[in-house]
Length: 288
Image (tube, rainbow, N blue to C red; front, side, top):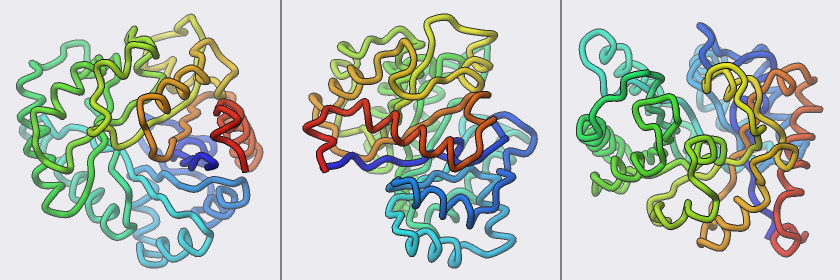
């Protein structure tokens, strides 16, 4: 079967990036959906600010209709942070949580991507595990799945830590997001990855590529210097082979976040991201 690829939010967003005060895409949502459909993708990702703008303008019912009529079957929403915090920061996170839950339910999202912030002083794993268990219980009540992503600059710096947090919960909503960028940058090899990750808790997998040397901070590198699949040093093809061998059968998010990608016309960037990703799959999987 041809792999199902999700155009994660930054692949179709144009000239915007994670961490900006306003992450809203300058590209009209209807145009993004049309371009995603035209370039072969099976799924679309939308970030919080894009979702709020769509709710204010066309509404979620109309957004869902446009997505489905374009032939796009998979929706993911992102990015929930701050769920472990307290006080004013937690109050802000709770608003975001409610808004993302609303969007996920209205759009029939496959999962919500969940992060662990950006920090130089990670919290104890027990604190993160307890908070995530509470979050997962709430998500399960709404029929929502959570895909938790470890990032090497966050409170959960390794995939092993994310696994411990997710498996602390017995909620059916508690799952993992496995992204080649973050597993590679944290030092976990493609061959060792599936020895530490339980496949039954993997809700999503993302592919991209990167270069051997980090430019700037890890966060700056991850939002400015990702490469198209197969065009860097991370060996995306081997990652995919090992993931398939481990039994993964779900869709694949393609997350190209880079200054180069943002500089391209959206249609050109989508086409390049799709074709380079597909070229990394074994021919027996990618047969049409």
